[in-house]
Length: 389
Image 1: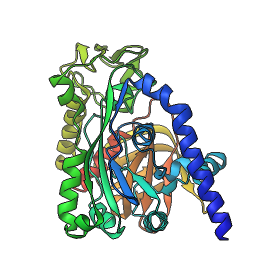
Image 2: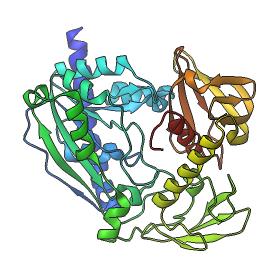
Image 3: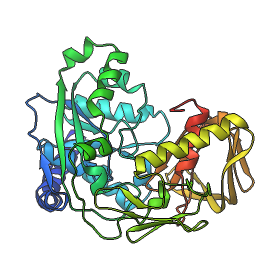
């Protein structure tokens, strides 16, 4: 048994080093990346970074020569081949989005006790607007319980190079920096609340503030495509689900207003809002105002949606399909209905797949359909929970 474990560890560490050697130079060139130096901290330790792109494992992987296991969303592991590659080949640890996952914590602890490092993106989701998002306030306590060191890192410029809502990498300038290192003794002397405050400070990044201070052009093709995954309400006609990105342009299909998405990440044209951050902040405020006016009204709606339930083996089974609606009180899709109070966590996988966990332990998710905006549902859920209102 021990020999098998040693062989598996050898395979995973070989895979890590090989991927770093073979893929690292290409992505370093493609992102125009600057990589900081690995800190001088004795393993085992947990690496925590802000979550900006689906390729953040590249940034942390290039910074740390010492092999480590990544905590990844279980949505990535639904494909059996990808599951085998990531879990067996690279030692990744699965985590259910939108849920507190004790098994993930135990897997991290087991890895660290073997003297191996772990990488965790505590936000659990990449950013739609360029700012570091909130993270579970249990994180500080979990990291203290690991009995290991901690390294915090910040990824800069990644939002404009590979925006969550967009397609393809844009050439510009990115960086990953070591912000702080903490020994296990230092963590033991901190309260969970103090560590949470330190994490929030270390990981915070505002892409638009950085761009305003030192503008960088991010060049690419079809720069506006996918903006409908981030923007769901038109500030001109107030219409919902009418925005579409095509090529380098954004258009409202209801009122015809258009804008150009520039190489600097700004919108130039007929819309009064000129940055994605400004727009996403505004539309969430509008959603919050409607919620306060009448929580029982339908606040988000999309026809032709699909709902899947995750089975014990991780595969998905179609549960229902039809119109999806959400008020400040309940979520329905076809004949399926649940009060929001019975949802213990709701998040977005990839660009537009909603994943949510019910308090009875069931994990459900919607299908991935073109043009669907999942962000308005997450915004509404957060508003009902009193987050960022």
